[in-house]
Length: 98
Image (cartoon, rainbow, N blue to C red):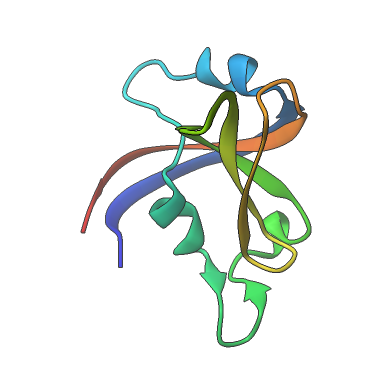
């Protein structure tokens, strides 16, 4: 479980490149573990209603295709990838420890 993490407002949709420009003042794109901590896999639903049905960027490029980055879909908790020009939501975070 991720502790002491501060979640920003939901923004977007926007490209990964636009999302990366928002990483200022200690704010960053959430990692896959950050995002999946907000999905209840036992119930198959988002723990936060505002995120339900949306997909969110992570900071990580997809290693096999560097023009792609990882995203988390909050309709079913799926972790997948998309080209960096895709339009997805962003929810910046700061802090956080495991």
